[in-house]
Image 1 (cartoon, rainbow, N blue to C red):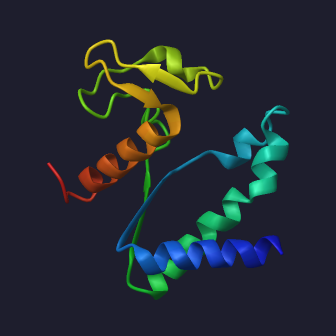
Image 2: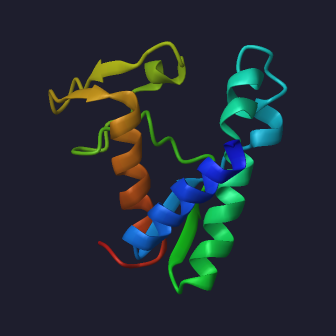
Length: 125
């Protein structure tokens, strides 16, 4: 059931998008953390990434991994202020002291990953 669900999700992502970006996460290292391991293994990140890669290639889509050291959740996507406090995973929301925008950590990170991916591929300024 899990693999079938991953196929459905990855197929939909590839079908709906010309460019697909993700972080180049150190999954092997992350599962060594006992607090994160079960959650990471439950969602099968590695398998989802694998499926996105081959389905993107098969469907003439662009799949690109953003460097794992890019601080996607720490950077304000409006002014590029870097908030070092958000390294703590328990901080899920924060306000940029420079720009004043209130962020959900994951949504902000996804915008930053998109922007960095476009920049990596020289598709954006």
